[in-house]
Every structure is written in C-alpha cells, then in structure tokens.
Image 1 (cartoon, rainbow, N blue to C red):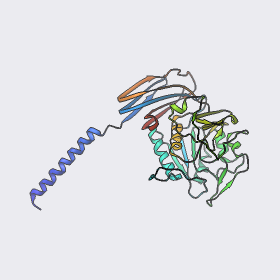
Image 2 (cartoon, helix red, strand yellow):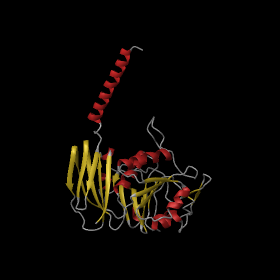
Image 3 (cartoon, rainbow, N blue to C red):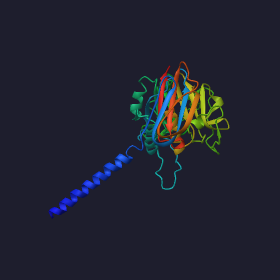
Image 4 (spheres, one colour):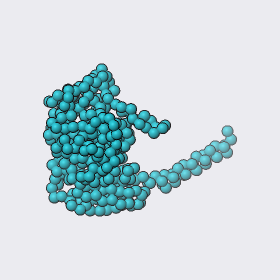
Length: 341
C-alpha cells in the first residue's frame, strides 16, 4: 500500500473521531434526569430535555414501605400462566419476558435493589427479617417450599411479620407449585389466608374490564395507572384495612392493597398485559401501602432545567413517600424518597 494511502486512512479515522466527539458533546447529555426531596417538604426535578413531571406526596402512617425486593421465578416449579394478548409482531409476554421488562421499568424509577430467587432461595429469604422487604410473584402459583395452602406456612408468617407480597395473575393462594413442574389446588378459602376471613375475589369469566376510576382517591390519575382488568381482583368491601386504587367495577378494584398483620398483600387484577406490568412498577416505585393517604400532588412541565417546589399538607410525624417522576403515562424517569419524620 502506498504511504499516501496510509495518510488518507489516518486522516479519515481522525475526522470520524472528531465527528463522534462532537456528536457526544452535542447529544450525550440529552437524557439526563435527577431529583431530590427533603424532610421539610421541598422537592426538585431536573430534566435536560422536556417532559411533564408529577410529584406525589403520600402519608404511610406507621407502615415502612419496602426498599428491597425479591422476584420469584423458577422454571422447574409449576406455574399457572395464561396466554397474553400482544401486538402483532411483538415478543410474547411470557413470565420470563414479563419479569425482565418489569426490572427495566423499575430501573427507570431508580428501584435497583431487586434480586431474582428460585423456590429454594425463596424459602431462605423468607426466613430472614421481613420489614422493609417486598416479594413480587406473577407465576400464578406459590412454590411448595413456602406455601402449603394452610395457615402457619412460611410465606404467611413472613407477611404477617412485616413483609409485603406483590401479586399479579390468577387467584391469590389458589395454586401450589410443585418441584415436578405441576400444580395442586389449595383447599377452599385460600384467599382468606392472605386477605382476611371474609375476603372475596372477582369472578374469572365475563367482561372484567372496568371503565370508572376508583372514586375514593386520585391515585389512578396521579400514578398514571392504566390496567383496568378486574379479573381475580379483590372485592373491596370484603376486606378491612385496605386501599383500592386504579379502576373499579361491581365493587372490585384493579389494585387493592390489604393489611396482613404487620405486613401487606397487594393484589393486581387481570392476566398478563403491558398495562398490568407498568402498573406493577408504578405502584411498587411509588411507595404507597394499604394505609396510604395522598396528601398532595404537584404537576407541570420541566424543560432543560430544574423545577423546585414545596408540598402542601406536609405532615409533622409518620412515614412519608415522595414519588417524583417524568413522562406521565410514558414515564422515562422516577425516584421515591421514603422518610420517617
């Protein structure tokens, strides 16, 4: 090769390098977000681009919202998962893909202390302190390592001692996953083990689409909740110590958070869907619980800069959750600040 060719190659590489550096300098910081909140009720949200912002203040009373999460997934154990409707050409929303996308959604909301556990590992984790810990289950069946279908089993003791179970898909407590890949059905009254003696779940057939917002609070709008399927959902009047959010139909709500001893059980209605998955991430990230009361919500637009604000109705004592997020229904960033006052 002629020496002049080497020179041309070096020049071309140098030009490309300059272009890439210029591109990075110009566009590298487009997607930068940040936020903060303090114990005096002040908050700030930064966006290097432009998005709508929402700031939600919730009073959680004496309950400590989870900051650490486990996701149960074990291909070897039985599960009950129904086919999910997906857009033409989209990847099938099976259990593994659903969970991988859920983890990504949680990362957008700065929820990163998330660990997968199999059936054996789950039994170990549920033997550890429960307060401040959440367990996410979408398998439709709880493994026999932690659940027997009767009171006094490991997962029920864990919840009542302060753990939080986030459940989506199938009737809660109905199925027990076996190590041979099959499932067995728990005795009648399984829902009462998790939700209280008078608990009732919605029917699994017919039109289970709810079109009305839960009237008791504004969380449906302020948390950008979208799932309106009340299949397997809790009948709100049948449980005490609970918070219903999202959509409602015939006395059932798409999301119901219920007290269980010192812990909590959250039931999210419907079969697998992207809307269900996004609601799961939004509610987990928001830090709300069965006794939450929304004290304030601020919203607006932030463009290439920082918005500062102060909440009204800031409480003097208790546990509060400040949920700050960008993008509304199509969120791109969020962060929750949990504080004990």
